[in-house]
Amino acid sequence: MNPTSSTRPDRAVNIPSAAHHQYRQQRQALTAASTAHAVHDGLTDLIYVLLPIWQTQFGISYAMAGLMRGVYAGCMASFQIQASKFAEKYGRRTLLVGGTALAGLAYLLAGQTATFIGLTAALAIAGVGASTQHPLASSLVADAYDDDKSRSRSALATYNFAGDLGKMALPAAVGFALSWWSWQQSVSMVGIFGLLTAIWLAWAIKESPVATHPLATNTIEKTETKNNHAYGRGFQALLATGVIDSATRMGFLTFLPFVLKDKGATTANIGVALTLLFVGGAAGKLVCGYLGRRIGMLKTVWLTEILTAIVIFCILYLPLTPALLTLPVIGLALNGTSSVLYGSVPELVSTHRRSQAFALFYTGTIGGSALSPLLFGWLGDHTNIIAAMKCVALFVILTLPLAWVVDKELPT
Image (cartoon, rainbow, N blue to C red; front, side, top):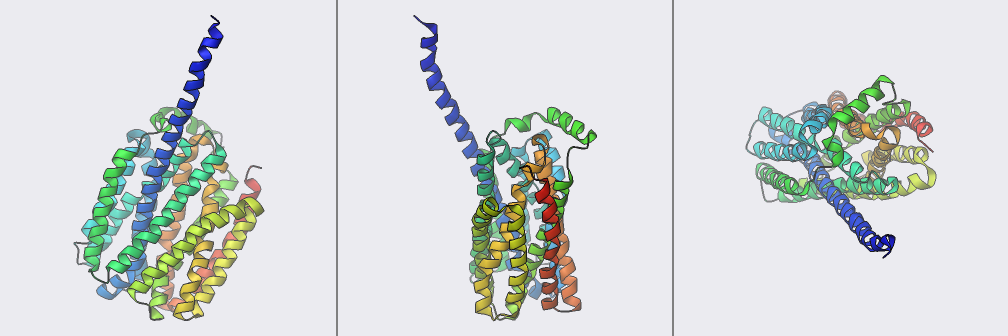
């Protein structure tokens, strides 16, 4: 008998079996990461619905309202690099599950407090829990699809899109729930939902092999740092672009409910408004992904950022109903830009620095989002909310020259 022919049937069986196993692992990683993204982004953007309620209950200024949002975002930004480092020692599964549980517990505690200080402290704890999601879940997806760049981009786009689903669903659900429940009851239920999600993630997340070799990864990263090849000019410009874009987005989102409230919007109207905004944002992922392939990163970013500035000015001067109808358009521009920028991170850094590059990128962008509500809130207190929002619209124009630098550094 020919030994060669006898081994061929086994090979024919094993190859599809191995490919199927790899496919299952990839889908499981993508499902777990996307679920974490949806829940964490929903928890984060729920704050926008609650800020006008908290302002009325506690009698705080725009700057203090911005501070509450900034505390959450600041804690989320401050611990992302540490979360990435801890994951090398304890595993991404442990950090993601623990972070999600901590965020859920913090919301549960927020629902039990009746003081401004207690609520702000709960938001700080929730921000620490949320710091684990972006760098670890995104690198979990990138590592799972590491052998195919085109599928990796598609998987990251799906993961990114899942965050918009959470942004649409949770704020809208709580906005309607507030018609029957108090904000304390609503927030407590959200906290329980976060804890249940953590339990599910503990079952769903499987460690990537890449995450189990921190010593090898650290050795490579030290060599890259020594040779100054870790983060080049392209990544630095991308980070600066992301910071400005995120600061604009969070400044707009934080004070949009106050603008709408001045136009006569109810709490339910604000929940619907945010849903319309995030529906446009979800569409922006698809539209800008297509535009990025057709006309390139530079033209896409310029188009979305200029559109953002124009539509913000339109919203300020339109009556309530027309202003609500423009929200899907600005949602498309706001989130479309972030999607294009986010998708460029793996192309500007080496594979072994990917997790920390995502952590650094999100630290910068979320750090910008933490400072901008405080800054633009201070402007609103000393001028008015309309003037502050005009500054938000003009600030985004600073991204245009930076995007040009990023485009020059992207590999062809």
